[in-house]
Image (tube, rainbow, N blue to C red):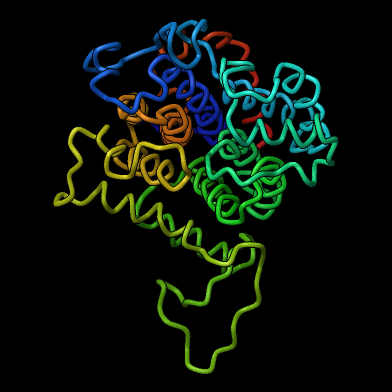
Length: 357
């Protein structure tokens, strides 16, 4: 791949996430892979219409789901405010999203509203609770799907990134492990936007940020995970998260992708290895694996995410951002950009944020 600029990688991450969302719109949430193959063929290679009896019925190929809708709200807030402004983002949710919801799953933009968003709507709209009390216990990736834009914006400011991603994640998801994995994904994405590869060295770079207090994870080991010295005091906590393991797993997946004795063939079967369901601990390993396996091939990374079935939309959003950050916007196939609804406006928005990084 040709050399890319930081701005190209930042825009590539944002557009890659949106493209991943739209590519999975039709074949979303098929847990019976034979049924998905019957409806969409042996290989899904582009945007597709949802079937009338499935999730997102009534939408058309190239449109965004509610995850893409919310990510776009976040991008507009970041672009308009010059950075993350929680009151502005919350206002946008209250004015542009919540009036379209009724608390049921099969409703709202995109035709489906996830559990964490439904819970936040109930607590904020029906119970009139403050935003500090709207987070629920969903163990899914909705927070990542919007905070990835925050991670791009603050790709060169890891401490600011961690604070902003944490603050936004707990608006809808209060579980500390989910929030730590959300912040870890943002930190990974930020390094890719800087120009690093998702490889076996990446977790070491993340751990250096922990050691210098720029990422809020607790760690007792020495360099290269060596044991602490006898008698050494417990290091002071640098933040909320008890364990750095969420920062270590990406390089494990990268090692698996690079090891010739470990083969997942075809690569879409990563969904069977790490799990097809929605939970964050199924989604992140698959996204890290695919982005590490296809660092210079956006199309292969994202289409394997889609063709794995199950919660392939989250998998494709997360993979799309990681892959787009590695290839840059110029590495995303033209047909994916051309087929995305409102692509020109979304691209201008992504580039506006990218030049703020």
